[in-house]
Image (cartoon, rainbow, N blue to C red; front, side, top):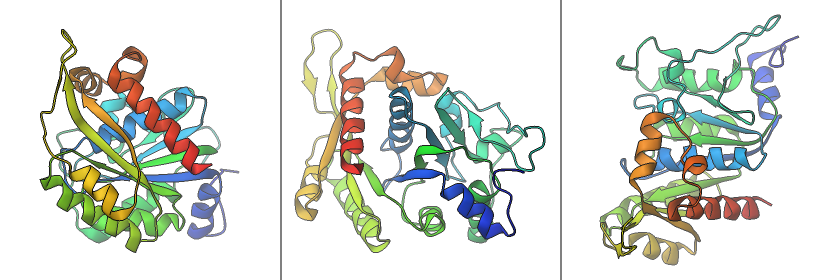
Length: 272
């Protein structure tokens, strides 16, 4: 019998959720802060440490996880004797699912209103043969709209949120809204992640603050939250995402990779 078969849709979804130990949602108040980059690298890093990880992209209108993992042209497979497909197997320990893996062309826009998006996200959790997972990382679109609300309500219990922002003071406004959103949805905040914190010259090692400001630090202080880490700007992160290659594997000794691994260690410690 299929792992998600049951007497009802609710039972199928619950059977999937019961096989997931920890659920984390990655959110941001605004776009362009590197939220998906953080989600992808946290998932890859946990998988490299031997954890069974699922990465679910619920950004319906602008999915990027599939391209960043190099699975854009892979389709879902239906195992023999199974009624429902499995997520795409990225590595031995990492499984991913995105609306991009269901579309015939990456150029095809998704022109959907709220109810259709809610239905798609529900199917991601209910009608997919998810394996047993140590972590399910959810990459949510920026803001506090339909997708993050839907996934939190469907999961019923989320272990925590990771809030991504850039350093400049204008990002403080968006970071604070995201913090309040997480609190209103009764999702514990694991911590803040400051992305693009500084630029380290690859030739001389000098640090330059491209995005000046203390927005993330101020938000952390005001709400009594931890900053899990500050990831420097690194062109190799962009190149890795565009090519679908693992940044943590190829550039494991870089300052940014070390900072990402430190963030992952902090996440694990807080979950425990």
